[in-house]
Image (cartoon, rainbow, N blue to C red; front, side, top):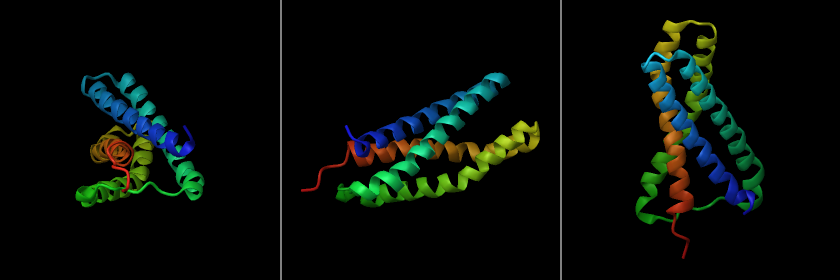
Length: 146
């Protein structure tokens, strides 16, 4: 298995892991377990950072040498591209928000942290989930070109 095949799977696993850590972190804070929440959110942040590094490497180093995988599901092209574009745009928008939420937590500015997290969290969750779905659509469910 080469990097063109391996890295998309690694990226999907990292996105899926982020999703699990995020949901677990939400459950922890809702049950009053602040330290567990902090550890789980750090895990989500770390795997999301690893994803970003892997994603950038894949798109700037691997893809220029091997080319893009084409989406071949004619009836689902619009749905795929809506999901892909929303995933990418929201990931870009969410990155500074995540950094700000972490900053507010580190400064123990809990009211501001909680207020911004209520907006940031669902976007981060969506980006993580659609990252896995984009992988599945492009590498698992995609019909080879005929």
